[in-house]
Image (spheres, one colour):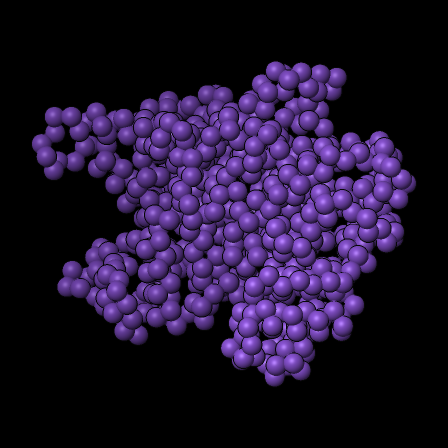
Length: 588
């Protein structure tokens, strides 16, 4: 039996006790249990302060009477103590033995059964005029890990993105390539397709900057006028313009896919702005007929949201062209019709907070049946130690370059320590890549999404810090111990051993929290809870490993227990880090 099921059982007993002793009616699932603080004796704690008013007794009296009731009526409770208003419960040793035995057998320990809920998670959603950068990495890692965690919690998840493949910014890259490339391709330039197109986006901005010099104020550079003309031709389906657009986009998609593959990320369904902005216009026309929107004298279409302390918002320009809101309205409706989801999660940076408040309010006023299931997973920007990223000047930190930089940090550290020298070169590189990606992903995911953060490549690979490699090292240690013990399958651990050392009990208690942490991370859409929990597991194991012999334990019974505890720890680490998109190496 899992510890969570034991807690559910005790909660029901406590509910009966509160009713019988004090006449208080409260369902068991409304009682809150939390791990007992280290300075107190016990496994889990019930806070009894909420019951004192109805019980007409002091917190200590309520705790004592409820504790005695649980001791007499629930076999899972071995002892209790009361500290002020905290009832600390100690579980029967058989509960912990059962947890270890059951956890080792459970192939999907910590997971939940099917909920019947279908959730769409949108993430990445790049522009097709430049490569993915550091900001995209945080977005992608949040979206991917949230998707994995939601799936583990029993939901059906559709991973998707909206590719911003049209607009003036795309035409700028196209125009620069047309003017400057002389037929150059990613192959002839020996560049990834997205980097290649991004080069021409930078080139365009250099052209525009140069042409602006000496121009009278308010006069438009020639290249900008040409880019606008190219956009007009694109919207009119001009054959040559569309062919050029498709050519450059194809190069970019090929480059994006290489980056996604490198990060271990894939999508279930793709949407493109070029396919959703026209349906968006139709939904706005329908809303105009229904009085949701209004038209100004110049023909532009707006919505008045001042009654909910938002502004008046443009949804269609006077010339009939769309804005971002047009596309987003269309995309939401198309997705609902395509997927029939219960919830739509948008992983987008916090600079778009207001945009999504407006979008969700508009969809609500349009009567969208899915409007209650819309959620913006907002996150803070990522900086490097040298400062904020830039984009148009070509000084942005590309995702591919950042991955390689972190892998190189791992490679350099391994060389300095003289590790993996007897491992084949190919296997070495695979280990370096797993450690590098683990360092990058963990360092970003351990931070609460709402916080702005600084990514430090050198700090991310520190094997002694709160890092991916530190956690991966705990797993590697466990695999080494299990190999030496010739254990290569889940142990059939049945021994009711109970003479635990404090560090062993602490480690077991932390492992038992895994299902609750996975559930919490899914409900809050916050992978940092799971990331930091994984660090706590690794830290507890490193302490246990340092202080206690496993293979040379004092008795066979102790050795078997410690091997089972090690294997369970490895299982939790591999599963938890896997939900974050991090693979574990067997060596390092």
